[in-house]
Amino acid sequence: MYIISRPLLACSRSLVPILFLWSGLNAIDLLRKNRHVSKNKEGLRKAIASMKDAAANSEWNFMNKLRLLEAEQQSITHQRHFLAIDLYDASIQSAKKSGFIHEQGLACEKAGFYFKNKAGNNEKALEYFKQARACYDEWGSSMKVGFIKKEIDSLDVSGS
Image 1 (cartoon, rainbow, N blue to C red):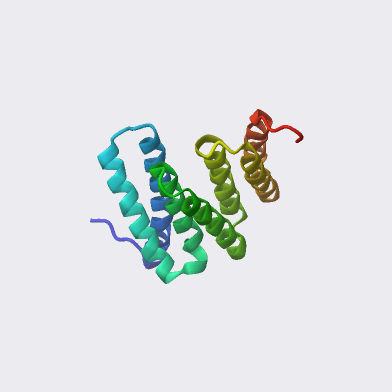
Image 2: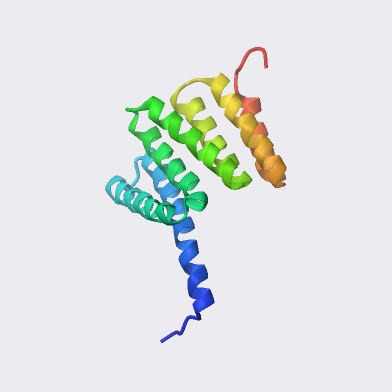
């Protein structure tokens, strides 16, 4: 039997919601590809439930993550376009308020892809991708800046 020290246990408990964020985003990507649908719907449901619990205990730390998962969930249902947009924007604002520039960039990036791929609105996609690029630049990730620059360059937006 392994004995886990209290500081390590506390650290691992705080990481659990982060793991649910990434497993939820992964489940959404797999759902978009129609892979293991029932399994990934259940994984997404669990990720959102876990993030709701975490946000109830620490809104400043987890609300942006919850809103991002909810926005991504709405983006695959094809039913509530305006709700998805509101949730992306709520995630962006919450991450900004909490000082999570990298998560603000992630929410902007996901919103950009939503507008590019689902809503067919390259102008709005460009706005969100530019915000993502600025966030990633401030965060210091040249790799993410380069990735977003390629997305921006791929958009067919006249006059930009």
